[in-house]
Length: 457
Image 1 (cartoon, rainbow, N blue to C red):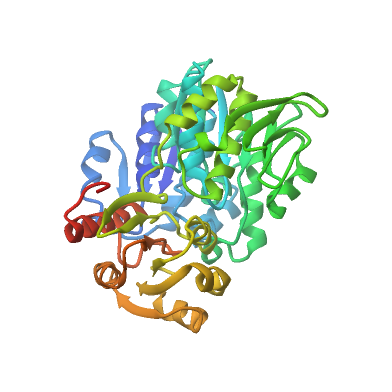
Image 2 (spheres, rainbow, N blue to C red):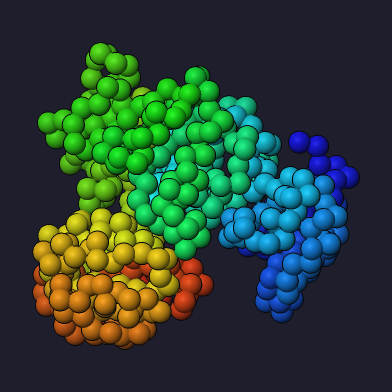
């Protein structure tokens, strides 16, 4: 892609939009940034952009700004059905995302991971396994490091391990991972994609440009993910908690094992007891990482060592503290119902569950069976609280708390020794917090303030 002298518009000044704008300018493009937020809201970033000669349009999108470009790069948070983008595409202007832009400049191999849940844990773990196996590895994408920031560090020998979301994938055309992984596909982001099918099809763009020499790793236990095997040109590998697979990773006799070819020998990788993460869903994440790492050429010994040394990623079923016999866990990254279900299932029972935030057109009644069996009480917060209460009423005692501070205080008073206070909201954070990370940090601070603890005790 030749960028020198081209007029390029970056739409949306989030983390990836800012990184894309600066990268494009370094490549010699004439760059403009357009964002719906006011100049005051963008004040932190505008000086650096202007210093690099980047024009900034704030407070809305001007149609003429869009029409005067050679290329438009869209941040993941900007819907592709934004009217100005729709009109720009109607005029024949190319519209791509930051992921598509960056992937055309990355050197080496790409290992891309998507799914409704487990992406970050699997991405970080896979990156650590590849590094333990001596492979130069870079980790980024939806995990918080824009892909364009990896370009300068990449080499012909490096592996870029990328967490990729449906928002990033829906604008890709040439994005070509050597190894693509779909962990699972369950309803999420229906407020953005409209239907589950649209969401699933966006996820499946991860393998759209793959060929017969590439690998696609699929969850044999998730039907929508498994269906992708019928639509890919890549060689399919599987992972499963439920039993052996033709080729890939599964659990057998208390061991994680791997088979490289159909009918080939079964290779033991590590015992289940060597996995330090909580919950069956994290065993799935380990299986996916094992399969990916073996395909990248990492030996089993290095995989076992890396998994044994791995600890939960922040905000993903993260242990916070124990006080008066009550354990506190931060699962703020559980921004959909399926993720919350996996967190609840990771504990035997006696859970005081904090639910709520900004609704994503979710069905909270799907949690009913788990709530009856494992949860003592639910404490609702945020704008989705009323909907949650309507859909789970009668399943478990519910206390409307409005705020996270009140929920933590109320749950802490109600919990007894042996109980668990779990933040697993099943909602996005954007009604009361800047991000799920912000929500998780506030939860941990509230726990530490109440318990006087900063770790197990």
